Image (cartoon, rainbow, N blue to C red; front, top):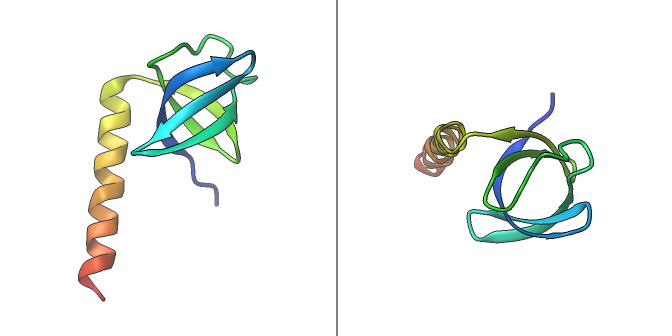
Length: 76
């Protein structure tokens, strides 16, 4: 099973983008989505952007992650 996480592109250096994951910033490859641009949301797996998401799709996915984290915290 694979997990991909949405993040927002905040800058570029050739084919490497700095992506913000809810405050955590990482550099990822955009080789698989050359159409991606600054302020786009991308779905990231294993250090690679694998698709470009609409803001709505990204927000929905991040909301689901938040709900899952909250459920996990409630079980502690």
